Amino acid sequence: MKTKIFMLWGSLLLFTTNMNAQWVVTDPTNLAQGIVNSANQIVQTSSTAKNMLSSFQETVKIYNQGKEYYDKLKSVHDLVKDARKVQQTVLLVGEISDIYIENFQKMMTDPNYSVDELAAISFGYTKILEEGADKLNELKNIVTSANGLSMSDKERMDIIDKVYSEIKKYRNLTVYYTKKNISVSYLRAREKNQTDRVLALYGNANDKYW
Image (cartoon, rainbow, N blue to C red; front, side, top):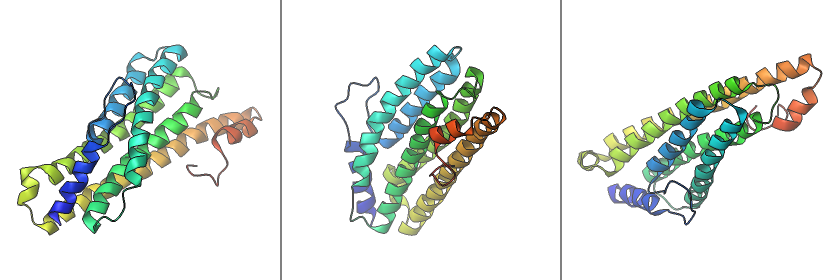
């Protein structure tokens, strides 16, 4: 059982790409932290729409590198229960990144937000991503450290389950946060009789995130 978990994490560390991005993928914790670091630049440097777009484009580069990694990870099958939970936990962090990039990209074309509001929205996403990255690092430490080796299967699985549950909450929070921000745009659009434009941009109430 222990060997299966360590083999899985080892496989996660080996997923790399040949893309010429500014940041090199070495493991899922570095991948998540790289997106966080780049996303922070949006908050720190986005005094104008042009600066915000430039910073976001750098974040998208790292995200696209990560998406290839996460897509490969999704194709890993035939794992034992605890190794599968590790995989699912890592993929949840990837999904948080997906929701952020997909929706913030649309928000940047939405005239119902100001530059300052977009920076604030990005800050909120970044804080959630930071929490997810921290939990992913905690998971890595349990799976790969000497301390993890000294634990019983139950002790280690309990911690893996706990981290998984916490990251799942962050994923759900990301969905809620996205819905609330889009609802602000919708209300502003309704005042201008432009709700069709918002629905076309983000989708209707039956779509995935709002």
